[in-house]
Image (cartoon, rainbow, N blue to C red):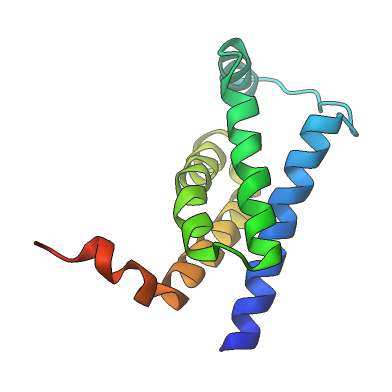
Length: 125
């Protein structure tokens, strides 16, 4: 189980690192979008702070996942980003839903693996 956790954690971290580094360094041109996803992305980009905030969160969490430091925290912090990715793909880009499902399942697996770290947070007092 530990080997599976290391593999999933590293791959998930590398995916987020790649996406954020490409965004910040502008390594690839933005693909041409049309339809509903274009309207959505225009709205996200109109809120000037939102995309850099998301990508900075992905960068920090990706580094945490790859290095193995603060993994339980990174799993919790990146979860809302993954849920949003899941909904965007489900409603606006259905062809890429398998990738989003893979991200979601990977994060849920890591949350389950580190479940003992969350007992204090989830205890009713």
